[in-house]
Length: 153
Image (cartoon, rainbow, N blue to C red; front, top):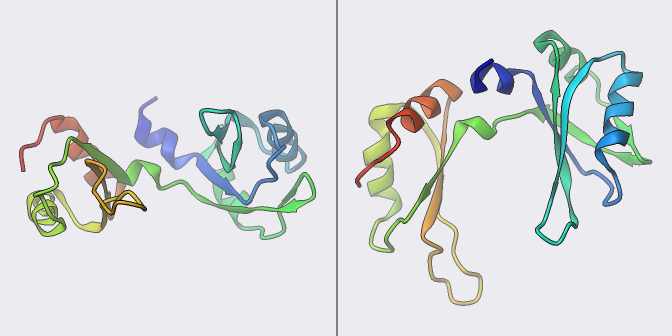
């Protein structure tokens, strides 16, 4: 199964309680009658919860069923759920500080519609961190960029 198909069956779960673990999320989805293929809680390097997870269901029809509800509570916390859009995002590394957003837009616009460009900066020094995130309008467009692997801007 390819990544595109997996992304269609994956849900982003946000606003999780810091102590929530994968097994708790798995149990919650089981109470909804949905078959879970994979759960991944996202944590920092120190192991602290970032408050969100990704849940991949066995059937993509189940995604619509789950997202059709708005009363999700896990570990006594109201949680938000939405379709995963991670695969629309392409992380570019080794971006020189001389390269601006307009140059990035110009280079990648030939690959498809760009929803946004994010160039993170150090909060204290305001210096760029040397990478950026380009979000495309569709997963297919993002995959085309990733297939090429190396880009020169």
